[in-house]
Every structure is written in structure tokens, then in C-alpha cells.
Length: 315
View: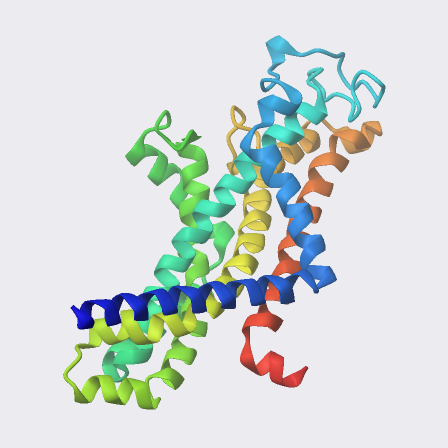
């Protein structure tokens, strides 16, 4: 009975310690003006992406346009209208859902591949490490745009043009896959370097001595010690994914039926908005991309300073 109480008490103490650490981290993060600014901007775009209909109504199409072609910004249409008379505020807000969803899915793929490869390579060493790192080197120099142009028709043919996942059509899923498989290598390199250091620590040696297997050592002893690095890297990876999605959609790999910010910019370029002086077709989606990337960058820098022991030592 006393042993059961002791175990329960130890668990309760661990949870209290975690709560204390979380509150301490939140207090330190709130003291970072750059991190808080990024958090506020990101929170605003996240709310818009989660419920665009609540703020601007359903996505406007060519048949449901509420303005005239190339209408300038006005009291009725704050961001003006595009070449088909569709409200630019409506399309920009709906574009947030597509761009940020693609960025999130691509980041998940990047982190899963990168963390797994980095942990296995760093802990295993030898031939396994050499092989995995040579593969990572190959993907590091692989041109994203060329790969996208090659994979797009192949993947769409395999999954079907009308296939959907989480409301995203196959044409956009291609972008998610391309970003994910071309971005994981940098994450793997970072995680591997930290794993190489951690596996030399005393607590890992003790785990080996008592007979703990490699898988359990990686999951229970090494992975928790690289979570801080994963979190900071995830924020910056998300920013890169959003920028890459915008670029790929801008060159024509997006889905016109699900307009992301890149697809909106592509439409502006195709309609000759710049030459016609219709700056309002370019400014809203472009500013949205810049603000989201800036927000993630500010948050990433703040998290890196707070979670990286070396950065805290420098301060």
C-alpha cells in the first residue's frame, strides 16, 4: 500500500514540476516583445483560417461575384475586386485557410521524416548513419521546383484529380508532399547533431548498462531532450513551408478552385493586374504572406533563445 502511495506521490510531483516549468516558460516568453508580436499576428491569421465564412462569408466564385471587374478599394469592398469581380478581402481570408493548412501538413511531414531519420542516424552511427546522411545530402540539394514539376502530374494521376484530404484537393496535396520530402533533410541534420551529443551522456550509458534497448533509449531518454529543438525548428519550418507553397502556386501548381495566397497572386499576374495598375489584387495576399512569415520568424527566434541552452548562456 505504501509503495502505491509513493508511486502516486512521485507522479503527482512530476506533474507539478512540469506545470511549474510551463508557467515559468510562459512568463519568460511573455517578456519577449518580438515573440509576443509574432504570436498575436499568427493568432489573428489562425482565427481567420479556422472560420473564414464567419468573417467574410462563403468563398466568392465567378458566378457569385459581388463587384465589377477591377473595382478599386471602396467602402463596399475594402480590398477591391479582381478581374472577375470577386471581392479580394473574401478571397484573401479564404486563402489563409488553404495556405496555412498546406503549411501545417507539410511541416508535419518534414518533422516526422526529419526527426526519425535524425534520431536513428545519430544514435546508430556507423554505416546506418553514413547511408542516411548521404540520402539527406541528396535531398538537401534537390531543387524543389523541378521536383514539383515532375511529381505533380504523376501524383495527380495516381490519387485522382478529384481526391481530397482534409478538404484539400489532389493538386494541393502534391504541393504538400513536395514540400515535405524536400525539407526534412535539414531537420534531420539538426536532430542528428544533437543526438550524437546526447548519446554520450551519463544517463544514456546507465540505461545501456541496465539493459534498456535502443528503441526505448531513443524514445524515453533522447527524444524528450530534443523536443525543445523540434519545437523551435517546427516554427521556422512552417514559415518556410508557407513561402514555398506560395511560390509553387504562383508558378501555376495551385488549384484554382481552392485559392491559396500563391494562387491569388498567380491570378493577378495572369490578368495583368500590375500593368493595369490594379495593385489591390497583389497587395493583400502578398502582405498576408509577409506577415505570416514574419510572425513565424519572430516566434522562432524567441523560442530558440528561450529553449536553446547555448543561447541562454550567451545572454
